[in-house]
Length: 145
Image (cartoon, rainbow, N blue to C red; front, top):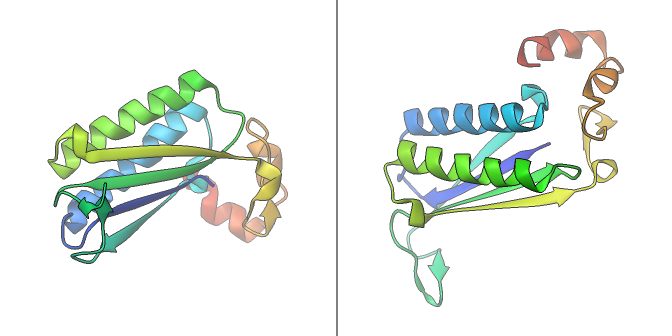
């Protein structure tokens, strides 16, 4: 957690743009919340032609939709900054107008999520939680902290 699902028309983003978006979203979430980078995942969904509608009409070709499921406990200021930064960065990287980038953030209680075989901690105690992971996993994730 957090999980950012990015949906765009198939072929809309190049592999390089996807990598840049991943790096940007990961950095933004880490910088704004202090959460370790190893918790941030970004998933891309390619939407086939004719499968995305807004207001009963086919969505614009450039339309992107990003849904971020994040642990609750983040301030409104943090979420506002994350929304603004993700919107601006995805617009820049994807070379599309900000009006065509929609970003939603949903708060989920940490106790309702499990990753790496453990229920997630509330924000702020990730280091203690990390220490409970198996040594081999800690070694693999350590550089991403």
